[in-house]
Length: 270
Image 1 (cartoon, helix red, strand yellow):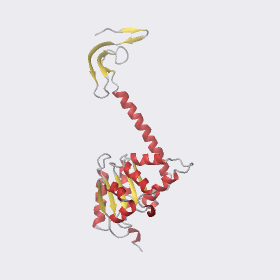
Image 2 (tube, one colour):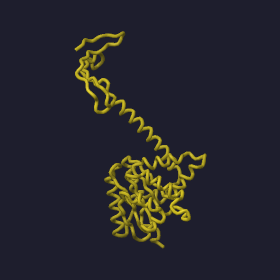
Image 3 (cartoon, helix red, strand yellow):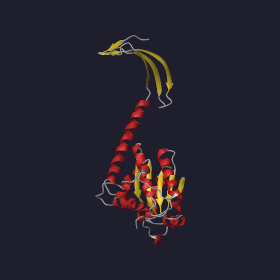
């Protein structure tokens, strides 16, 4: 092992070359070297350093990029949260205050609680909640997002009409968000809830070639392979007519259908 040398006022540690290899992580040539710390509280301690390895630099750069993307997502989400995108009754929704009135609704609640408990951003599939008005499809969807937010997952809940309105608003020069930022947020959140499929306006005179279908396809295509919850009051045939065959195919890809038929909770006192 080489002795301690001094270059200027800098004390150089004793060094002994151990081996040279190609790092499997970064692909760089690395010189593994044994050194003796020459000064400080750890003076005399022998350490092994991998000189030339870039793994730590790559890790820090990746971490910085992730933090930058997260900050961007947070800014966009604050813009959404600053607008009234969810009615007040849904803002109070959770699993505890959902009271199912039929066996189907009990089963739906249990399945969605299980989905939230076992959620994996890379492994969880999609869910399509189908049923008549007032059975709690939106309520349970919001409950899932609240449970996941507690676990630090990112979530976004939007009804289809409000989503399309938000995109149209970006065409106004004074809007703080761009269309690409909205689509980027939808693509990157861990869970996206697209509520009220089929309630959007479509110009049937144009058949499948219209702005609404095109935007829906962009959203659905961006979420391909990523956990998404859909809700609808429409039957399969009605939904195909409303969305078109291509969009419905995207909705059903890797999706579990949960039926939520029952009495309209909103009309219980009527």
